[in-house]
Image (spheres, rainbow, N blue to C red):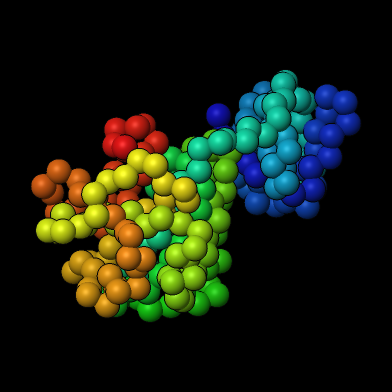
Length: 235
């Protein structure tokens, strides 16, 4: 069933109403061809509740429905942070963020690495990315909208995270340590790899992990590594 994240949700007993939201009306009427029996999920933007709803009627720029059941917001204990270099194409960045959202990442830092082709994101790009995130949450019915943060100087992250860099293994790299005192920040390289200057910006106790002997595209690496972490395929 489709999930819609909405503002201006009003609940009275078993009746639920969404006002001033022509987008949900358009989606239900024109895209989903929904009739009065159609069932879907509604969730308020404050993430307190999720409702399973049966559509009753359309009103001006809104809908009225009957609540079948409801559930409280699930607070997932497992959180994953990723630091992703800006790629060479906006479409690639959007794909990475969309897929990471669908499989439940909690926080994405974006940074312009030495070899990043995209050096910054304007306001319109950020608005589009946030829309993609919202649609990905609705499509996957996930509970968490990841926080996106653009970082100009990654040294500001040194004190709060231990860096784990996805790269081909290099001689003399720090060995994998399980007993970290800080949460792990998983770093995805850009096209054409990380530069020497990039490595100089990482903390000295960073570690490097590789995925078998494969050289992956950065969008593949981001998705595969997060999926692997979520499913405990790697440690």
